[in-house]
Image 1 (cartoon, rainbow, N blue to C red):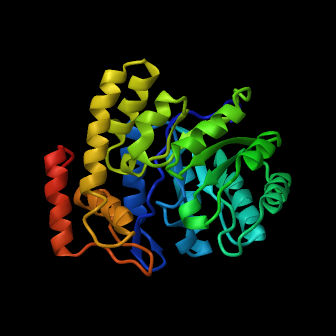
Image 2: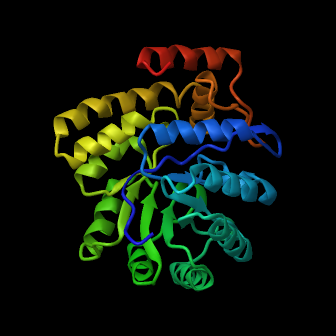
Length: 301
């Protein structure tokens, strides 16, 4: 990509038929559905895509099929986060061969790395790949934060184009934004959709929001309203985002309820299966009915 990315980029779920079988038709329907919703890109193999839980064979297949289905209509970003440096590089190179437009990298998530080690790690990754790279700050899963000094260091590396922040910490966002205020070509994306409106007001370049899997127009409309400076419309649309968060992502009892809710919604819409990679299971009848009722109340179903 010759210019920095902006807008709404859904972190696409990975439709599954079995433990290690891609729901191919569901993947095709999902991609067409979110493109029709006006999104500005698609991100595969992220957290919502269950990337770290999938076999390498399935990851490679998803990247290939997604790039082929999208066919350059919108940018495709591929998550390459892994505990193995070599596997991250291999997946990045595979993504390039398939026609992806960029890769996304979170810190290795087993042994905790120091910030100096992370800076060296990012610099080494950049040397090994050709695609633009976006950093991914996800402390709830990686158990460490990409500190402002590390982000600033990375922003000076050729090929590093921006960051997706899923910390949910607006103070962190403001700190990074201020530190890199003179880097006009470095993009800032927000993950948690509950603070999408505030982040856009504070100067975010877009959102990577799970709800855009099953209601892409809503998030695109929020972004477009923000771009137009229509903050009254942003506030109104933001209310629906909070309704989605409080009703679709909370139907279960565990932290996995968010992912189960997104996949259940897509299943009820007839787009793709709701199977999850182990150790998780899809919602059972009671929870599924709850999601159905809430989707109807939201006017999505």
